[in-house]
Image (cartoon, helix red, strand yellow):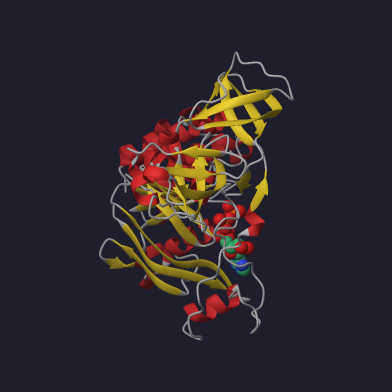
Length: 423
Ligand SMILES: Nc1ncnc2c1ncn2[C@@H]1O[C@H](COP(=O)(O)OP(=O)(O)OP(=O)(O)O)[C@@H](O)[C@H]1O
């Protein structure tokens, strides 16, 4: 067991593509950390740099007090499992699992009994003598996990190990991976783009975007108190509603959030009122999960939004309403995003990836920070609201919704939280 520390690690691929951008992260001894992020954000590249399968362009990887970037892959005490664990096709399950021990010089009897013990934990005891081609996808992944863990690695890296399995198998193996890594107390870094895997497995989640980390915390921290609008949008189904608003300070320092055609007010005792009353006219983004709304019958309740049902869906446990309120809604995937990948141009007001790469490598003066792409992230769209399952509303019905302002988050125009509480 050992802690992993990443110190300003960057990876620039040929063609000057910046895949990981001065990323720093600490995974504690024995911790289960999940690296969560959309496709292409650099998760696999980061894992491969830790394993030594990919050279870091700059920065350092530490295993405890040892500088890992100086070590060859086999000296790092790291085991890695990929999306589809490649097995030796001509060896049985037991032979596959015991192979790393045999390579290390252990005798067959001892290696076989260690493998059999691990196979029991992984529910593979009934298939020990079978060949990989006769196994299900889930069983093959279990064998790959067994083979990775048999030498008791210091660090265990898993790259979307469940992505090729069906839903039932995924749930089952997910629970086993969680239980097993905790029993073995091995420091684990688990890559996924599946929020359910992240929320259920992790001691802590690091949310990645465009080669950087936007937030790190326990599942409840990143879900309930996200650092950015992107993180708030990435976690939670249905996705959080992000509404463009302007701060209005009215008589007696009351703070209202002007949503264009409608408005909501913060309670004067709300801590955020005290902050925002000095920012009259500031543009903010109000984040409200679908569960923060409730249907009301009165028209003039405080913090009420009115709209028309555009679609209504039955989801088994609850119903989801799509309500046209004429409010400008912000796309969490676009807010605060940096410039797209293309070659630099002197007159280009937004520094390209190329310029950012050069400045990281010290080849160019640091570029000014890119402005957020604002207009592209805003559009008039529906609010998504969770309602009790017995609600029935026809398309076109006019509804009034009360918003519980104690449940809202406030972000600035670049998507950064302005009212964070727990961290
Ligand atoms: N060998 C390579 N050469 C050039 N670019 C690469 C190479 N490997 C990865 N990239 C690029 O680096 C970026 C990060 O890729 P990476 O595979 O790390 O992302 P990811 O978050 O793991 O994505 P996914 O969830 O789809 O596996 C991508 O834009 C990818 O195209």
